[in-house]
Image 1 (cartoon, helix red, strand yellow):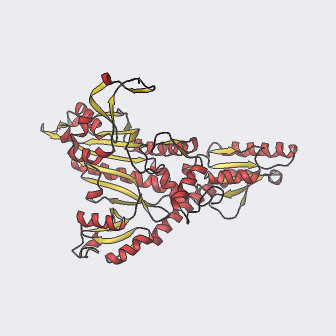
Image 2: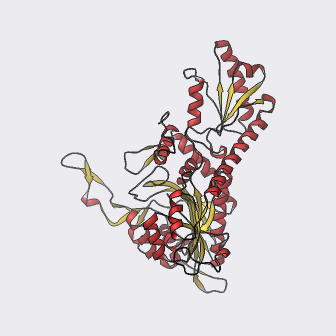
Length: 490
């Protein structure tokens, strides 16, 4: 271990935890499976929220908020939904505590609820209960609502950001008059997620549809974006679900159409969560620490003044203030003017925190009316004249954003494997990366492969499915129904 971070090659899981700790993104809470967002980590989520929220509103959606507590009976109304979440639900049974005889507190038996309440694992049930009260006519449709919220899914094995008992997310829930409108909404939101992941997080993703066994509980189709981490494992970065009329039927949500006939509403739901932060960490970071794409870096530029004497200090701090003033209208900039920390230690600290660009200012830079720039992605340092500082920094950050995306895309492309039989497939699984195969849809075979190799169908890619026509399944030898991407996944 060097400087508190385990090398990726020796222990990838520990490296991931070390990067989070050294970058001060999160910490463990007293409640097992839950985590505390430290300011630097929450600032990343804030930037993600701001960008996504604007995209949702640009596509006609509005924000609302629904209760954290859901009656247990609501989950029972949609059979697949309750089966999918029953084992993960936290249940509230009392509404008051009392002093215990041996000290401390205990639930007051007199406060037992007539009906237990579930802390939301997702909000379809409570939302569709409300939609049933709001929707009467075709004039009430579509309803396009998003909420930013926390949810609880009682996970047994947790990992910060990727899988925790409580996590933050957004969940969109829409209601439509026709199947065609709902399917179009589902695909539109998948496109929104793809654009966000690739353009903001610099993370290439594959758009696809899930197999039946990987589908969201209660959905007819689950669309997804799948990303590949540096260790060759996949990560589901976002999902968009076509729910059909399942929840409308479960909660009896009907509307009168333009011909005066009552019919059930068509539904979608879609969401991304704070696991996106974990995806960014594992896509871009290195053995030095966190690497952040500039568009989601809380600090995009850190200015580190360097001086030896008090006279030099005054000069370089004045120059640093001038540079920050020129950059601040456009960029998130911080000056590290601490005189109790040596410059080298400052450099290392901001590298571990993933700041994309460091600007060094010493007496020579003041004399030359310039700065010295060091990208977090490596390479040679270079000078930028103060007169062109905004253009120079913009170009540098754009180059870093593009470089991170290209690195990740190249890694995914170079590790993509095509297996023609099960023996080669098992070898490819051990090498990591996406494995593309011709596949005959079969839940039993899918389960066997998962049990034997820990690889799952990440998706059926939306592009290229026509290639399966006339081909043979790599596993069963039967006629292929799909082109499938397998991988081990988080």
